[in-house]
Image 1 (spheres, helix red, strand yellow):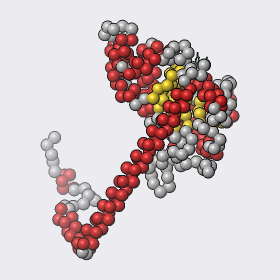
Image 2 (cartoon, rainbow, N blue to C red; image 1 turned 180 degrees about the vertical axis):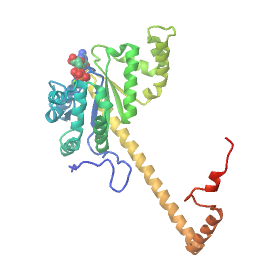
Image 3 (cartoon, rainbow, N blue to C red; image 1 turned 90 degrees about the vertical axis):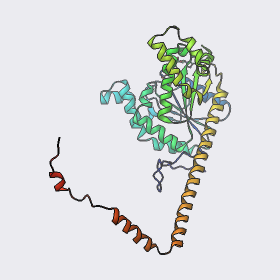
Image 4 (cartoon, rainbow, N blue to C red; image 1 turned 60 degrees about the vertical axis):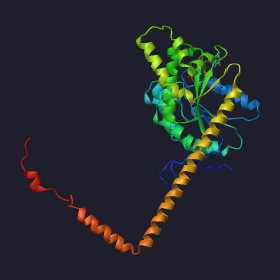
Length: 340
Ligand SMILES: Nc1nc2c(ncn2[C@@H]2O[C@H](COP(=O)(O)OP(=O)(O)OP(=O)(O)O)[C@@H](O)[C@H]2O)c(=O)[nH]1
Ligand SMILES: [Mg+2]
């Protein structure tokens, strides 16, 4: 039975954050630069899942979109009116998107309740985000939404890249740096989706990620220049990021590669489950060790006889090494003239 209540970020009896319920259906947060194809990707994945008779639960978090081209279960536009926010608060487009997200985030516990209530009926929860990526990834409300989702469901970030635009090595590098910063901020399982594979086959990007030399060759000018040297260095730095990264190539226009999307999501969730199991195991081992240490100490104390004797002994030692308190200042010392 799915629980209808929201999982709290912090459990009552302990101060450490509780992890997601790994038995819940996964949530997929779709992020990416403006125009990379986030909405079209969600639309195609929704159609793909409906065709497989495993429909998703879909949430639109873009308040500024005029038309949502997929069947949507929760739409931010039903909760806040973007145009009204602009008018009411005299805001520009980006400020209004942030305000809408702020207002939405105050209700997000209800959204999570809805997701939980429907968990028997869907296979995966998809969340489409605003084109102004920084409005979501760098705002407090974006963090709250991401964190509350990630604390109640196994959550995966899908970062959509426009493959046609990424053919330029510098644009590719900017995009990867952005992806890396999002991974750094969210610390969630991360999948890079090279979209628009019908325009350009993203194999070039995969090669650049696998082999630094290939990226080096692709830099237009092999001579040393500030930009080229910087790109080369960054590529080396990002090597570690590329190593643990899952990538898929898709076309949201033709539907190519969507089997791989579902496989990547399942693998990421499985990896997260394993990681959580290991963390749990470690925690239990630590607790057991702690319990054993306390037990040993009590046993030792009992063997050594009277506890009070031990305490007196300790106090006398403390008396010997304790020279004085700090309740008051040492006036005499303060009055001694010192050479400056
Ligand atoms: N050829 C091709 N075009 C695509 C593909 N995916 C998206 N597009 C086009 O790219 C444009 C932007 O797509 P959207 O889905 O609106 O992109 P978005 O990231 O949601 O845009 P914002 O929400 O405004 O940031 C549209 O014209 C889409 O038709 C694809 O796989 N192939
Ligand atoms: Mg969109």
